[in-house]
Length: 125
Figure 1 (spheres, rainbow, N blue to C red):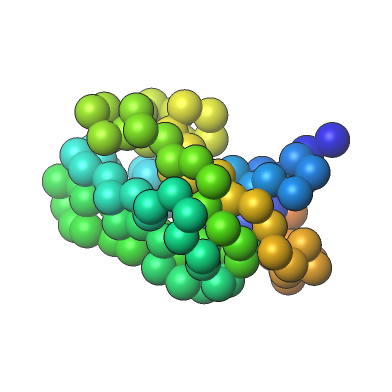
Figure 2: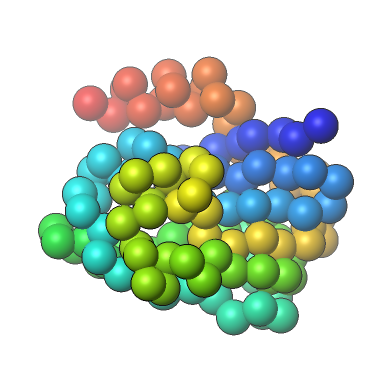
């Protein structure tokens, strides 16, 4: 069973077992506009919750992506190197950024579930 959580910085994390997949939310990509470049972390990199993990560049701006949980990067979405627009097309499925092995699953408790995140986003507009 997978768990889906969101951060206040508009990252999502889907967890299955001890592997977390991280990307940016539909809301974040819609705010950024057309994404033209994604800089991903290196496999093997240790990240602490809140660390800058990646950078997305759009036609509007560059923006940091922060890791919502701590762990070691186990895989990156290399398809984004050639086709950053996947983040616009499918931020929750094809446009994921990286996968990591969780070092502290309790951190998930501090993140929002989908309904709480939707309410949070509605409050921003």
